[in-house]
Length: 159
Image 1 (cartoon, one colour):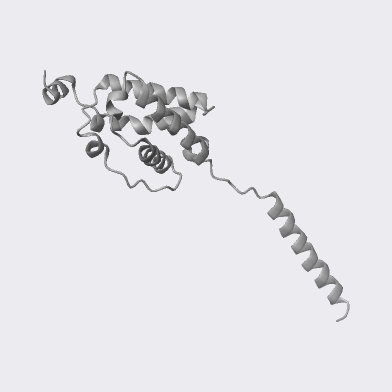
Image 2 (cartoon, helix red, strand yellow):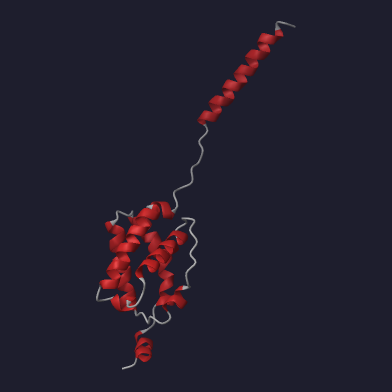
């Protein structure tokens, strides 16, 4: 029986080495980065949102919509919303877009100007064009909840 012991040890060792070699060769699929990660995570999103809101609040095409708005809470809310919709794990607890903008009477030209500024700020931050376009596609459906037609706005604010 003592002759079988070295054979068993050799067989066991061979099996262990084969398993280790096969394990080393196996590839573990890593999930692709989330849109949030491709956008640069919190640091870049916070920076883009900060610059965007500052620009929009002072730009003649959009500043009317920001009169009387507390900008810092708006920046925080928008950053959380972008984090949530891009897969960053944040929880957006703000209002719906329809409720948040109901009294603003934002028209298409104001909305489009803000979107243009967002594109420019994403480009300025070095955001990958694919990530930028994916984010814009996710945001686009919100337009119907934010924008009113010019006739409705005119009726709401009077002559």
